[in-house]
Length: 344
Ligand code: FA5
Image (cartoon, rainbow, N blue to C red; front, side):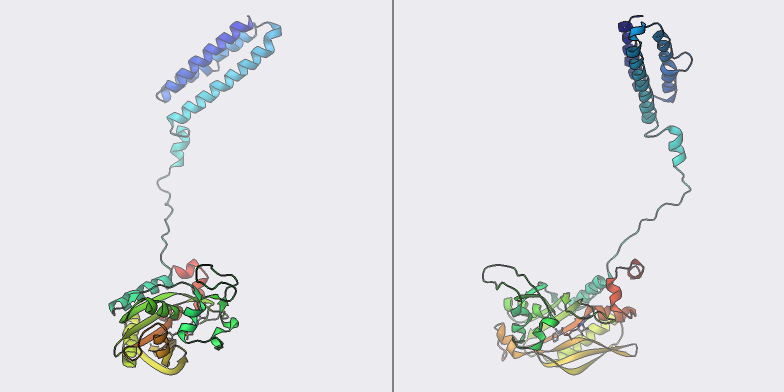
């Protein structure tokens, strides 16, 4: 048999097989095509293989090579048609892979971090007392973190060991640049200044967010923590208002009649100043500082201290949250241990 004729037979075979495997509409038709083309005894490929023996000796290598290629192509066509009819795998293995009795994988739902939940609740409680939420930046300048809060240059609260000063600075028109001109805010009282600078009294705001101090972590301290700041400026605001607001706030948060106690203290931006303790379930805990806004601060933002007075307070949110849930160590909030977090 001439090589040319042998190759023509092979070409015709692959063409017809391609059509047959591609149009097989079900398993039965596919099996029929398989037997016709690849059947071990009387398949057409087998018949062509017999013709190979009659090809001239010199052409045998080329004829054999082409025969093997066509054989592989036919097997690939069969595999593709089988996969198509079983929807991706062989019919048998697809059936075996689906076992309706195997328990499903439970989808795990995330939820808000306990500190985020506490912040939302504090906003809600203070919102009912008429306070709106104000925001401020975490990277602050010296004016808002210190000077406007009556903390002059020589004051120990500005010590580099007590603050995170930044080595680089934002550049901008009229903005001081350079090392030590900016810091991560050490308290949310900065927002008092920002709000009063842009708002005429009366003012009734809270501000909540992260603050930063190089404190050594322990059960009640962390270098990054959250504060809630409250500020109320109006005519005739007094210490009695401060105490009743904090009492209402604490009683709502702890869902109990919480006692509030003031201890004399000092903050440069309030006069008088107090430490705020709250008693709940028989224990007193220090939650933050508070006081009447210092007249110097009111003047610094352009208010008239003879016209208006103000009260302000700043509380540590981790400590409030820990006390409420009986958590002995605030470092738990920052470990990101899911076994701890999923309890809230
Ligand atoms: C202040 O930060 C004042 N700005 C509060 C204030 C506001 C006074 C308005 C007057 C008027 P103090 O440094 O005491 O105050 O911090 C307030 C509270 O933040 C503390 O009582 C404590 O609950 C919490 N706190 C302070 N340092 C840490 C820390 N390292 N980790 C966690 N909580 C802290």
